[in-house]
Length: 107
Image (cartoon, rainbow, N blue to C red):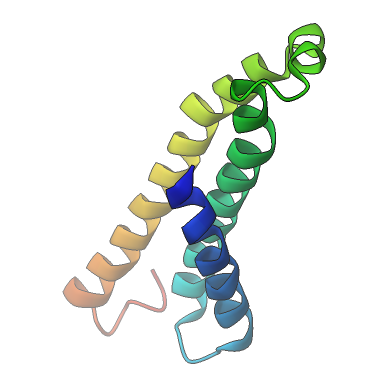
């Protein structure tokens, strides 16, 4: 919880920098932006839903609506899969930049 509270403003600042800074390559910036949005979503959902239920705040609300179950499915399958996909695409982008420097823009 403390780590999420510390790094949520860092993710928000990084998102602002990515939106305003055009010096980074477009596809690389696109993938970094989406990874950052996934991290922001994870942090906000963890802090606002999961931790409030864990600490007993509005516990009945979460039990009746089974929000914790949907959140756990999202946090254990959707978020890591999408994060891994974007890391793979960033790695592939950098690999083509090194191996095919003249055809990198075409790939």
